[in-house]
Image (cartoon, rainbow, N blue to C red; front, side, top):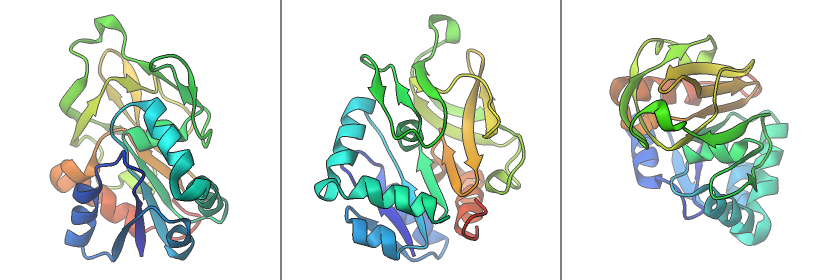
Length: 205
């Protein structure tokens, strides 16, 4: 079972419908107990960073965050999507600095003024740097909607994209995965990425 976390900041229906279309048992939940029962966990997100991290930490009486951390520690495949990826990072400077979950070592910053139109919205090509999450998706166009990003590429960057300079489009480190783009809105390429995630064994994300 794949648990899609509901903390009032996620594109839940699109994600769950995409997974159901692929044939995977899915539950949309805001309860820590469901994370414990699930084999995989997805943390979607849309909106402002500060609101998202506050709501996430408050969800299920404060039990959702430790349940997610426990899932990561136990090797369950965990996937952050868009703002869900960003709140996994150290923090963001959106409307002042706000701490994230610190699941990987990166800071989220706004696109520079010379990047072009912000938010970065629409289809852009990603370049895979290897890893099972992006298997078969190198060079594909995927759908982005965001004004903030993790600049550059890092050792755990699974895919990069170029918009006002290179930024991290996907993360893969152990069982921890994330995409800045929306796979559930990215057509066949996005469905392939979701299928790759759903097929991962514990500890191999």
